[in-house]
Image (cartoon, rainbow, N blue to C red; front, side, top):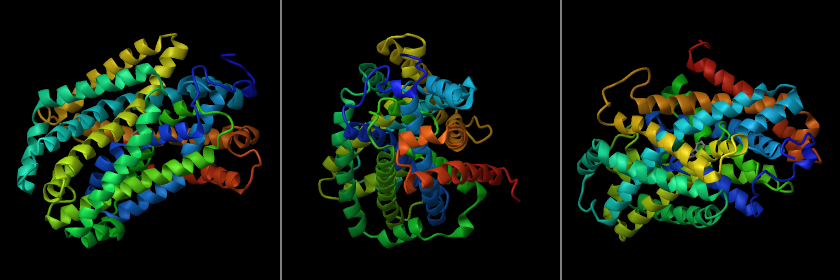
Length: 460
Ligand code: PHE
């Protein structure tokens, strides 16, 4: 059955299925919602001038990211195995070439690279959870908070310690399997995070800077929009939605046949986008109310939120809970970054889940030191885009994810026969299916290519 030639016979994955549609939605949402929404979106939007960037981001999310997410989940469920084997199998079945497996291979490498820095940043949130719990922000002004952040990233051992802890937790959870624990965690975590964020939004509305913050976020200033910020917006869309590297493909492999991929994708993409915008609506009012710099960079959330926390009632509790939930959101994304590799080691290399998780987790842990050192010892070691962290971040979000997503949508839109894709997405092949096909065949791939060409200056 492992390599059954008949897709209809592959009704179950090689190991496990989600217990329900909700479980799958939660898992994909857990993958999508993470540091990308709350840490990265505000700072990248801030660096790229706000409004116009946000508009391009939204276009990329719904025009490119959404159809690619559907394609990716569909391929995962069709293949019912890890992304490499799925692409090899479907490549042979649908396109007569097993070489499509390279899409899976590149994705897996990309997931490794992302997780190596993702874990370090998740470590920052754990550190800030402890700081918030100890009321360390009390009375601090913007300058003091900036020093506090500076002191954290200047300390390689502290960063290494938190990174190590986070990777241990991730490895243990992945070793226990996709379903146990994960479902429950996401079911509680995402709603709780949203509630805490709404409380923070309340603060943002009542303490000034709200109008300015909204204007920055939603009024497009097209002069601020450069070719590289368009690429950054597209990269951020891929990163935030977790598409282009096989994470949702690996999860799709465990999706029961009768569940709707279209509905799931629309729900997850909408929730992910709402949470990113909510984060922006909290951060930028604080930025403007305190005359801070929106283009501050990766430290933005950590230097702004504590300002609000010191002033709001119950700030110690709200702050601790917020950073804890953020670390949780990071964990559920980290798990999805590791699952493709682990599934591959199990299925193609016959390893046990525990051993596979340990091997992958250990490798990512080692690689993470490049990011740890990028903020201190190697901070002045710059090449191409900057530090190691800057380069890994740029390479994965802006190049590898869009390239992977491009190949996925080309495969699903052009190589897969209509019967197969309609069978997975919408057996009646109604308007929604036709719309998906137009987006997957034309809009998404053409847009990715245009953004790439524009970024390298080929469009004049
Ligand atoms: N989407 C996750 C976030 O926003 C990060 C991620 C990227 C997870 C790619 C899986 C794959 O934090």
